[in-house]
Length: 152
Length: 152
DNA sequence: GCTTTTGATGCAACATTGTAGCATTAGATT
DNA sequence: AATCTAATGCTACAATGTTGCATCAAAAGC
Ligand SMILES: [Mn+2]
Ligand SMILES: [Mn+2]
Ligand SMILES: [Zn+2]
Ligand SMILES: [Zn+2]
Image: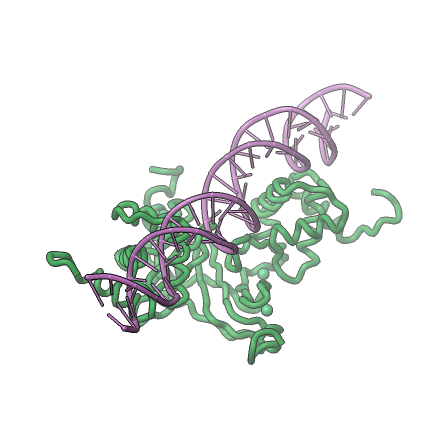
């Protein structure tokens, strides 16, 4: 590691990757850091923009594959629900699966950390691997702005 | 209506369309009937195949627009959750929103009529329009077939 | 440090799912 | 039958994601 470089986040990302037996590449490190910094799940496109901003050259396909790998390894998880594109978020430590809110006005996806996405009892024979709970509507910001008329 | 034609389902579809102020077209009638006959939500593609099977010429765009209209009118509803494509199902009478099960083996979406998709209490300011609950895993058929090894 | 190995990348080409614009058709109404 | 216009069918395009393959570079071996 070169001297005078801010180490904290980068190191945890690097260690995370190595611990899963993967090669530590600029793209993977930057993707993990982007997800870690974000309070809400990010789309492929948003992550790509972050990489561009950080001056990290990348290819659409590479990014897709980096994200696939992170999900395979359980480092990140994929969220459907919003529009047509997947969103990704980092998996925190004492992770319980939580619900998400999709705002139909601003398009944001908000993590509802306190709302568990629990699987109910199902008919015999069904094996549930995970539950996804997505609420659609207007988020707090958008609701405030536009109860009457659209856009304040 | 021509004589000797089986009227029941067709008529209810025609009436449903007319009651919503739309024009009764072959495509709309056939789409509604396909949805009514199906026990599970159908993708655009599956509906298209049904129309082809019924000898009803159609265009991809027309089908998309027919489905959009049905959803706008509240005659059908759209379901995300599974793979990348929307699925559609008819809205039955005493309709409560129910959860769905997505089988990751066979790709099927199963309606869990008895499992409500209820919206929990949210932080102040959030206005929920609808809740989507999707369980992912292995369905009863697939679970039975392949607990050990893949594919029986 | 240099070489080797192979996981990861970058590029091109393609697939799937869904939209927009616009001329034409045909369902409803008169 | 004539009229009005909602709905259709094309074409062209956008957004999102995948496959194959040659090349590169991260990690391991020496
Ligand atoms: Mn989340
Ligand atoms: Mn259903
Ligand atoms: Zn919002
Ligand atoms: Zn199944």
